[in-house]
Length: 237
Ligand code: OAD
Image (tube, rainbow, N blue to C red; front, side, top):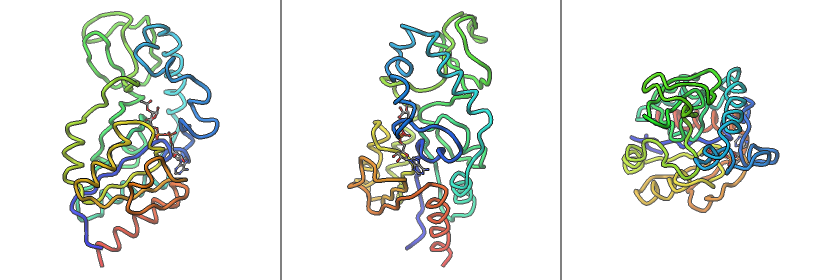
C-alpha cells in the first residue's frame, strides 16, 4: 500500500467507550435513558432549560476524570509519525483526542467543556456547571448561556472545511460511530465518491457498512492501534 497523502478520520462515541464515556445508541446508552428531543434540541432547551442544564452539567462532571485510551493515543501517534496529513473530525464532545496529543482536530459537534451564548453567539472554554442565573461575560445577557454542543436540527461546525478535507482525502477511516447521524454519516460516501479508500473500525458493522472498502470489527483499543501500526509500517516499507 502506498503512503496516503491525506488521511481523514471520523470518530464517534465508540472510540471513547473504553475510557468510560457512555455511547448513545448501544444497549443502556444515553438515548435509552433520555429522549434526545428533551435534552439535545433547541426546542427542548426553550421548553425546559433547567433539565437541559442538568443533563449537560452531569455529563461535564463525568468527563472531568476520564483519560484517553490506547485508541486515542494511537491516533495521536499516527498524526506524529505518518508521512502524510492526518486530520481527525470528531463527533465526540469530550477532550480525549487533544489530551492524547492530536492537534489536527475538528470538533464538529462542539465541546462539552465549552459554553455558547444564545444571544451574542460568543463561545468560550467552560468547565463549571451552567445555569439560567449566569450572565454572558461578553454581552451581559442573562439566561442564554448554553452548552457549546451541536443539537439535532442545528448545523455542525466547520462543514466547509470538512468538505474540503473529504475532497482531498485518499484514505477515510471511520471509527466508533454507528452511522446514524447526518451529515457525519454521509462522509464515507462523499470520500468514496472523491476516490478515497474507505475503512471502518468499529465494534460491529455500522449502518453504512456497505460503503466501506474494508472493515475491521473489534474494540477500539485493540483494532485502532493495530491498524495504525499497519499504516505506519506500510508507509515505511
Ligand atoms: P453511537 O452511540 O450512535 O454509536 C457508537 C458506535 O460505537 C456503535 O456502532 C458501537 O457498536 C460502537 N462501539 C461501542 N463500543 C465500542 C468500542 N469499545 N470500540 C469500538 N466501537 C465501539 O455514537 P455516535 O455514532 O458517535 O450527537 O453518535 C453520533 C452522534 O449521535 C453523537 O455525536 C451525538 C449523538 O446523538 C449529538 O448529540 C448531536
